[in-house]
Length: 428
Ligand SMILES: [Zn+2]
Image (cartoon, rainbow, N blue to C red; front, side, top):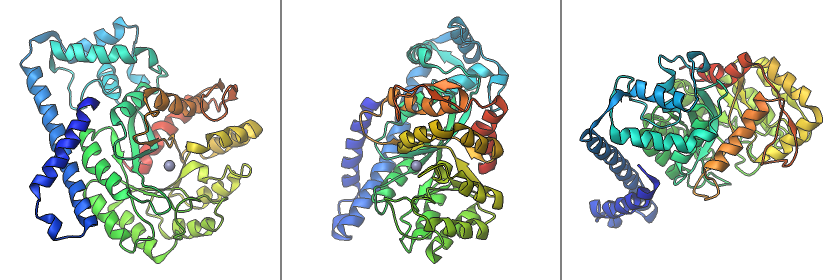
């Protein structure tokens, strides 16, 4: 589906939603009616998008066949553009590197097989898309990276994100739905949109998390509903200075952790232990009371704040084997750069010590903002990859016009960061 068609689909969805349920306005409150309409809008959008795919398949199937099967065609396309791929360059096991790379780049649907006979029309579409990306491909031999921390709000251009991330070798992305502070306002709609629409369009590429209003007494039920609809984890904003004062160890939150244990899904949480110091003891209690739940403490436990306080993050990792940390910097990238310049060795030492417990992510909020285009997503994620992979790099975000020092991690550690640790955290 192209983006040009998206507004039309939404318009149709709204009209259809009204047509389907004209009497609802007399039975329920405005808010309930609004939520009901949004639900229908999502269902209709998904149905129309899937229909669009089927129409495309139908048009394709009536076209003349290309002389080569898909696998041979892709090998030819990549190699004639001097891109030679090897099985060992892939973090996930692959039988056919060219087919896998085309899927990572979102050039072909993930269901396509190597011996599929493609049509001339598909060949034209694949090569056109490939030529647009060709000069931006990061050929680092680390294909199949798993990105563990990005945000999604309805209307964000998911195809742009997948193309930009794919060009950097990222094959799977955890998206967490996100509302607005202070109580995650609007999260239900963003969550439904992500779980019931976006995830179903790209089931192999997107790992869709749930989120909650942490002070809502029904939070555990809302979370369970989301899991039943296909949610694969939970994002908590607790301990974020702009969100919530519901403690992590409240009775209400314990019901939520019990659901995570029951459904065996991980919890990614904010938890600024330095900026909101009371979260530290709360989390010690939660991590120890739920050893069966995998917790991912974001942003180095937010411990690179008012100094490099990674010893406090290490305390969690030493005590609780069920805790991982993600290295995402998000909007705080400038602060991280400042501290990295102060003592990069200290941070690198932390990463090496806890190399089996670290996860990669950028923490971009993908929403309708027009500046979040291909280049923004690509450049912003590349800042993180360069930090992990290079000795020296520049980054247009955070501290600009500075030659930064990177961690320059060995390939076996990068493999853990990008693939093996996510695999363990998710049990896939
Ligand atoms: Zn985040």
